[in-house]
Length: 229
Ligand SMILES: Nc1ncnc2c1ncn2[C@@H]1O[C@H](COP(=O)(O)OP(=O)(O)OP(=O)(O)O)[C@@H](O)[C@H]1O
Ligand SMILES: [Mg+2]
Image 1: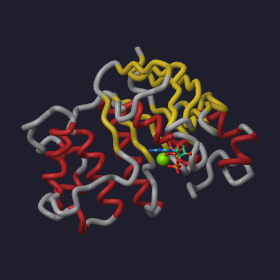
Image 2: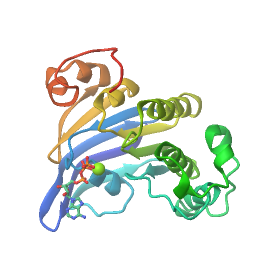
Image 3: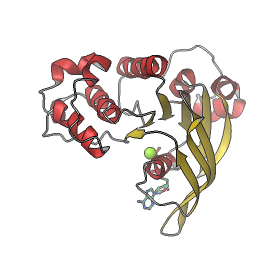
């Protein structure tokens, strides 16, 4: 079964087309990457999946619960980490749910639970944003720009958590990432979005070897096991 099925999705902003005829699926327990340059429409797709914008055409089906980690994290900086997590439950229609289940999943947050979120590092805030999304007990997590502005070691830690959530709990992930090497290294399958259309799709391994992907997204040369940059 697919947790996300998108077909023929077209989104326009006051006449300008941001997405045109996009087809995309995420299977149960699957890790899927969506890569593409700035302005390609990646965040627009995330917003359409979350119901924040209304498509001009096409269909979106979500089987199960979807939660998103929005681009830029959107912390409530004056509230504590724990209150930010609680708001995740509220935002996702799970008002009143305790935050206790989140800390074992993301142990780094335990010592931070009473800190104001605005005082956290970028990596710690991204961890809170993931925890907040997990409050919905999602079947699929949509992460918009996991690595944005974060140091490689911090990103590796976050990726480790996503891998574990996928392996242990069957959480499906749609990962939107500027760092194509990272995304293709983590995910089973990938889509390349360019100017609002799916330009390429396939197994992540195949796409990583595709000269068009290498030229545009992997710094022009193909490596299969190099360090993430
Ligand atoms: N609210 C809006 N009103 C008008 N145009 C918009 C709006 N939001 C996005 N756009 C335009 O739609 C296109 C796609 O934007 P989007 O944010 O989806 O791209 P993106 O792939 O997420 O880019 P980035 O990698 O920079 O985050 C861009 O041309 C953008 O300027
Ligand atoms: Mg974006």
